[in-house]
Image 1 (cartoon, helix red, strand yellow):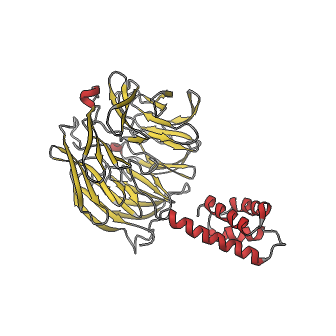
Image 2: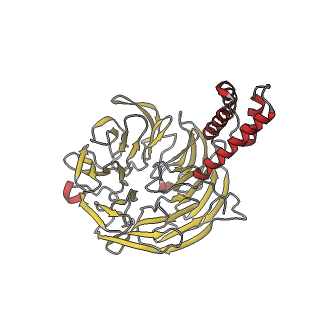
Image 3: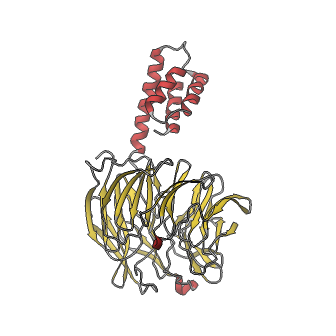
Length: 469
């Protein structure tokens, strides 16, 4: 139960029944510090009501509260789309949805599965449609797929010549971003594209490699695009101060450019709190915050490993405690807060949690994620966000990605195993395990309306796991 939503409905019910501010605030203050479960809330609130109110009045107050809550949760429980890398808020988390936890008797049910091309680009979901960016032969391919049936609606393709220098997958790395009636893409060799959502018709293409001399990096170009108002932000590591660029969403023309840094592998994030929205961008060299409309740099802080053969790959997380980033190769984790043109360090260190490529998720003051290099067998950890204190660690899991759905964690392991955990700082508690894909899973999965989508280099699978099948 969401206490804030309960309190809103409760106060409104009090006022509608002419109980007044004093009584409502007295009861709701007591509610706000109690258990988040509904029966204790109602019990404590009933006890807290002034004794000169009749039980009939108390009963009607709670009855109206329950009706309002039911209406509110009917909307919330529908869930939302997964329109971009790391989900609707680019933090790997969704609320207002539930997952079946009794996998022994009610395991996740496979809705459909299909063969796909290569790539580490994750699926996205919008308006009951799946969009997957993958490689078929010499073509970078965007498919529109019906979420319910798995049938393809349309296909958009453009040529690619990317070859991985280390023998890894040759497909696209960046996950598409759908915003309004457009889908925005970046291929591994730097082709930036906009495609019409309903038809797959090309709106524009810009070659970042030839236009801004973008470097290939170690593993190709990978940060996922971010739509912000009238522009789309790409981290491309181009020359002549075009490390980060914003293109007009309708025309593909350059709106602004910023930094001389090489690209990392972390994706940009929009902070939309308060009066002044800000971009957070982590390049190969520094963590920046910028004005989204102009690219003007508000503040920056160098944060990278001293090793040349290293990457910054996990995306920044915007938390109540500050902005969090983490990398391996000895860099470690960092929590900062911005004050004017400075980024003030709250805590940092390599012993807390070092994300090799998978971004952590946040739940009720704690971060959950993979600690250590992928090739060495990382641990899965829980740390306190405000201090970096390690709450627990679990080894023998290998690498993977994590999504937070309300109070549960879904771990999509590289091995193809899906693991359901409690999101608890007390201990590592497994609720279910299921092999759903062959090994080699690197793409970030998607979750929407009880549907879980994940892909290996050759397979895309759709699993139904709603708490109310």
